[in-house]
Image (tube, rainbow, N blue to C red; front, side, top):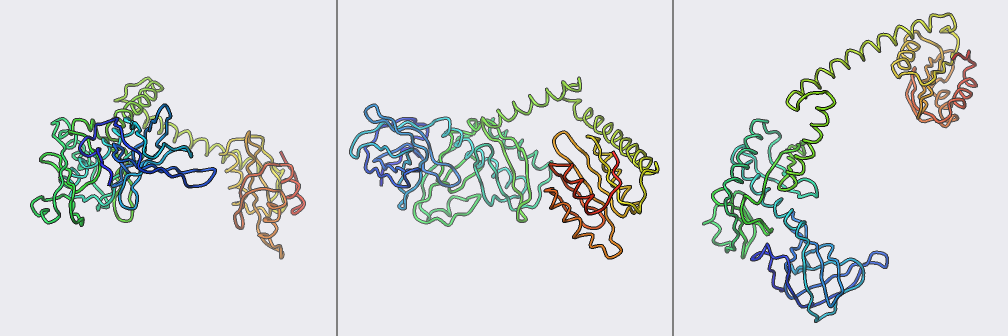
Length: 404
């Protein structure tokens, strides 16, 4: 087994090693080159933590390591881009992508910190973890957690960060685990690696971690969702939390500027604006309904005669009001078309009678017009690309009085 350096020296960014094997597989368009070294600082993916990326160098040649995985026997395997590979037996220089590595060290240590806080404060056991490219998620065996509890979890985690508690790892025999109480039991046998946040958390873990809680930096809850009776919590951790805060603050400042308000007053101003919008929306619908009634009462239309109404990029409120009035007044057949700037909305109102297979007839109109939509008696709606074609198809099926 090659010597792994990432446990004893997780902050090592470079080292030299000898190439033990190098083989290219995959396909011609997607070759997959795998390299095994006699020693490595590259962490192979495992325990929810992605594998390291970086560069191998040999006598001026550079090979991009796009991932590091575990072989069948647990050996770290460096996966290179392309088909080129270093020479077996040669000495290569390794350099990891430190930003990528440290980011996931923060994610992993921060997840341990948060899982312990969730267990202590909300009696929530961690079921699964995912360290994504933007956020880390923790699924717990609770269907809900009160906002006040979640706030307490964040506060407790940040206090432990500020206390700069050491994070250590050490191997123990599975026979000796009874001497080391764990937050989460393990079924591993033989030598088991434990990771401990001083006087806060201890679990079995094969990941790579930061030296102390201060290097986690920060934690911030950004969302949650119910999942299979459990709760999945979404966190920004470490430098990601700082970046997330910066983006949110910039957005809040921009929104506050639109209202000529401070960030603190922004929620009240938004609620006020929403109330005004709802009031205006209600007035618009009321006016549209009155206009629709007057239009149909103008004498140009009769419920017993098919009608075609064509609108020129009118507001959706008027279109919807006309459709509703036509349906409520029991028009035998009518088609409303609204020629918008980017799409054509249509509605067909039709009532069966005198043996007319109205469902089949309207579906035929929609199909022949090349439109997209559906519905059932008495209303069908959708969009189309050619309003004139739809009008012709409707008029052919229902001889109409055309109005604009």
